[in-house]
Amino acid sequence: MTRSGPQQPKQPNAIAERPTGPLAGVRVIDITTVVLGPFCSQTLGDMGADVIKVEPLQGDTTRQIGPSRTPGMGSYFANLNRNKRSLALDLKRPVARQAVLRLTETADVFVHNMRIGAAARLGLDYATLSARNPRLIYACASGFRKGSSRQEFPAYDDLIQGASGVAALNAGPDGAPRYFPTVMVDKLTGATLASMIGMALFHRERTGQGQEIHLPMMETILSFGLVEHLWHGTLGEPEKGVGYPRMLTPHRRPYPTKDGYISVIAHSDAQWGKLFEAMGVPDLIDDPRFSSVPARSRNIDAAYATLTEGMGRRSTAEWLALLQPFDIPCGKANSLEDLFIDPYLVETDYFESYRHPVEGDVVVPAIPARFSKSPPNLHRGWPTLGEHSREVLGEAGYSIADINDIIG
Image (cartoon, rainbow, N blue to C red; front, side):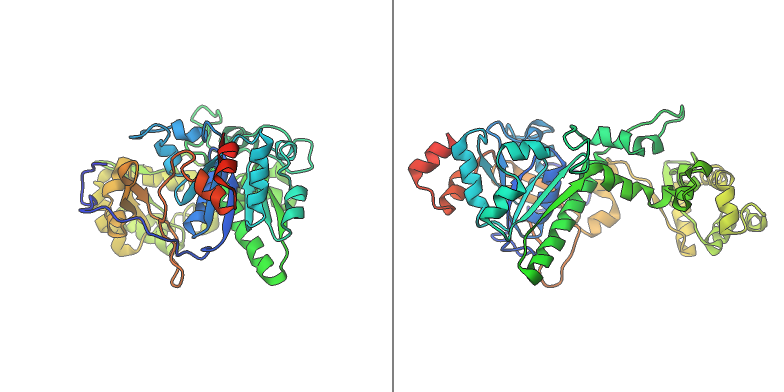
């Protein structure tokens, strides 16, 4: 991949030969597709787990989305499936399902994002798998709570954004609800599911017990979004208003400067006082509308409107030079393209270049977490479809003839 800017590395990094993260030695059977499940299992893989991604013979649908140099290796798939091995099977065939059952006997974690009924029809339910491996952590996520009337409803990110009120929070100027321009519910649920798996593994270390985890997308995004927006609902009085006003004012946005946009946030009285001083209106901190946190909360539209007006008087760089010495949180509002030359991301080597065995030179976002004793690493590029089928089945003890039969 060719990029301009100071972050262009001179030499691609080598993919590590073995995992070093805190989950090294943990085996995960991953029967997930699209975003939610793969985001979860990639997190486990990034932490060192041996993730065996069981794909249908046509592959995960995200393989076909985004640019690639090789068919079936789209960028969308790439950003959800590093640090995994691919095993391609037709799970409608009994011999293939039996192979998955055999693999789970030596696994630590089994994760899927199928509907609960679909998993049961395939014989991949918790009762079946835990009978073979009582120490197994069985983790699944679907749209709605297991055991509810909506258990078997189909669910995707857009649906849950709408049903949870998240799309209403992102309403346009006309008041119509809009989806956030990212698969937020899927990724949040995937990250939460990975966290829950880690906790279940910790419980097993203490007790020896495996268990089942079910995580509904709907409740996950509600617990996330209602932290600030439950408002009067916290007191059992939703009719008096829900939604945090500071989050909902149209003036809460990056503010236009003479040459771009800037993000500025003040919270305390001291920060607002310094911000008004920098803007050349120091007396505003004595205005009854703006003199305290409760007052600004009641008059948040007017408070933020002062920033909308004031930030247009200087360039972004001029504002940063003026505000940063006051210790006021601020920064340039980047475009997606700006991220590749952002000085901070260059400094921290966020975009790492590697030589993928199939795709050639590629760019991978860095794993965010840092561990002092068990640092995670990139030890596998995203796999081609079925790249590790023979390897994984061979490790399970199948003969060459059996493997040929299983993979068709």
